[in-house]
Image (cartoon, rainbow, N blue to C red):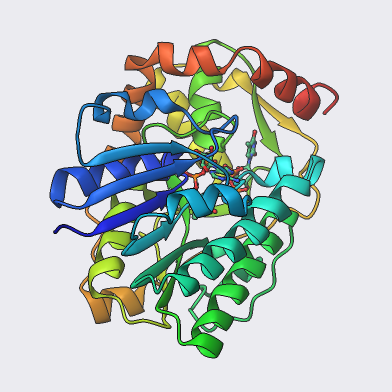
Length: 336
Ligand code: NAD
Ligand code: TYD
């Protein structure tokens, strides 16, 4: 019988892209466990509803009761995407980050230990390493030095996952990826926020001097790398994932404006984010050398396609950018 893969947070940005990849390429039975927070959107996978290898379960990784129900059936592999994922929200209201990212990961690890799950992939982030100066890159053994409540909660989850490998011999693997872009990203993150604001001729808020650097990877390449780790990765290992596209934020904003043919007068420099990490850059040498990973999406082409996706899927983000999102936007940018 085909293996059952539990994907948590499958209705979010990266989870959506990963569920699609798994259904398209393998004969796994997929269970998508998602709480459907503001960031989870059932509509993203509406067309998978008819696939008899796909099951959606609304539930919370921080609830043991919810997990007991899911684990009533055998689960072979867990890929844990579920998280509160936005740094700015973690600064305004960190509670849910602790609950989901730390307690949720702990509950999943405990459940996996009790049920002898065969593989546990913890989806982490390069933000656990903190901030870089103007040179160098994050390696898997770079000391952990998180600066935001978000990255501190993800670091705690990584440490728990490592402890479960070391103490209980659990088959855990951690991936740490750089900033993703691509279709289905919630328009609170830099790239979709800039695209959707520019399409509506709204101001584009750039934090500080706009020279903070992020290392961008297309979500397709991130999902391909997780797929490799899931099938070929070595238990107890950590794999960095990136695509060597270091860009200052202002370069990204200007690129989006150029693709859309919108004026740079929309750019507005605003008060910096507290504790704002200056630069991220990832060394993917280990996954490249050991597992044969190679990113396939050219950055300029990937950005053009992403902008097009938001142009073509206006309904998707217009529905999101009403109601609760408006309240958030006012709180975050109103007095900045
Ligand atoms: P996202 O915010 O778009 O999606 C998160 C999903 O998790 C949503 O569907 C949400 O409903 C669900 N969720 C939240 N709390 C839950 C809970 N308690 N129980 C069950 N489901 C819950 O996030 P994303 O950008 O897709 O990120 C996915 C994972 O990848 C996260 O773990 C994040 O830390 C990691 N990551 C993200 C990036 C990035 O650039 N976006 C980079 C590296 C790593
Ligand atoms: P973000 O997409 O929130 O990802 P992260 O903070 O996890 O890297 O932000 C990417 C970069 O863009 C970061 O340096 C903060 C900056 N930024 C802005 O300048 N303006 C914005 O409105 C947002 C959301 C982010």
